[in-house]
Image (cartoon, rainbow, N blue to C red):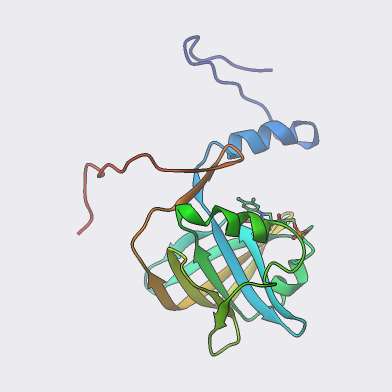
Length: 181
Ligand SMILES: Cc1cc2nc3c(=O)[nH]c(=O)nc-3n(C[C@H](O)[C@H](O)[C@H](O)COP(=O)(O)O)c2cc1C
């Protein structure tokens, strides 16, 4: 049953469940995010995945989170890892986002470095957070990974965005009414 609070701007309500997966995804997709690539290293080599579940958690100590789907072929690699790196993509890095969303060896033919823990580091991203894992929490069909940031890197540029199942970019910035000092 849908409830229309305002005829000019109709909204529908529903209880999420197996029958309502599409609508639940659509509702979640109204929340715009950036796009990241998370990398780690396994005995079989480097692994990376496109993820928009990234979020900042704590400034002091510096902690971030993201979640890996239990259904993912790359789940074991990340569930078992001690270290990972989060690469925030710039607006011009759409191809990289698409590349790491696909299964297979996204690193093939790609130039990358690595940090002391052997974690692959991609160049030219908008910002990067090298992390050591501090906790992993059950999150239903995802596992929530928390990492302490051991090194952060950034450059100027515009972020790649993701909303309503599509990539996009800002068409302008405006300052918030109240600025943090
Ligand atoms: C914009 C975008 C964001 C995504 N965010 C996540 C995420 O946060 N966590 C996750 O596990 N998968 C996420 N995915 C899906 C993975 O990138 C990948 O496509 C999926 O895991 C299926 O491939 P796999 O089974 O080879 O891992 C995202 C995909 C896209 C395109």
